[in-house]
Length: 300
Figure 1 (cartoon, one colour):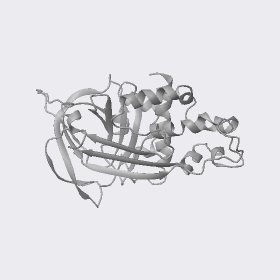
Figure 2 (tube, rainbow, N blue to C red; figure 1 turned 30 degrees about the horizontal axis):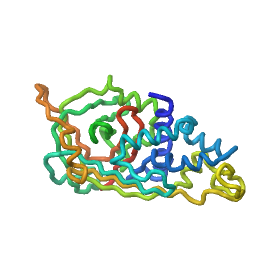
Figure 3 (cartoon, rainbow, N blue to C red; figure 1 turned 45 degrees about the vertical axis):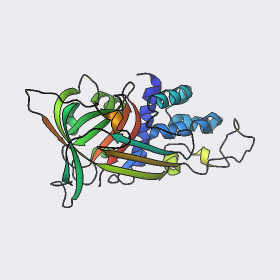
Figure 4 (cartoon, helix red, strand yellow; figure 1 turned 90 degrees about the vertical axis):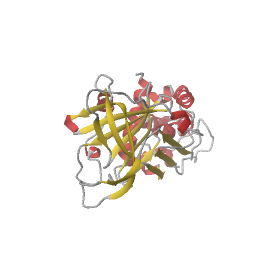
């Protein structure tokens, strides 16, 4: 993996950590790539300490390959990402795969005193899967979009509250790459039970970016955007991010997704992967492992 892909993934993990810090039990959906791409134009106009702070947030190397990277991912994921170059861009992603079977299921059942009934989708197929003993967490990869993108699920074996528990243990770039290493994720026949859900969230990213070290850009007395304007008082007033994610068994992209998952016969009994309690998810570009969307599903 090139350094620019590593930088993008590190930014995504750091951003998610800050975004989800206030309430580890909330649903989260965001596109770090969309955010970094949208703010690239701001970085190109920045100088001095303002530029240095943004570079630090973006892990430095994003800027060096930024323009090329925007085009690369947008070309490969164009059917899922639209209009990423607007500061207040709304991000919409519809994730669809052909699941067979549907029924009601109690989410959080057996884990907490309170549970909610959700619609679950079922699919018996072959998926790459691994188990992280040290974290008591299963990792599952669901390919889609002509196999160019994947949804990586981190499902804890057990939970103590409405969070996944993984938020308290830092997920680094090195750990994530180790967990999804092809040499450690083996294809197995899986009986997958997965909730059908739709998330739509809107975030004010100003406090998040400030907490990550990007402070001068929002301060009229310190912001330096002299590469784009002669106005010395020019500063960012706000950064708004709106994200939408829908996971279901049908939709506008269903035809393109048909045939992505094949059913295999195996002498071994299938493993069960039942996502009936909070989990983390990553939408990644398979060729680079760059994170396009990251989030947490905690509550129906």
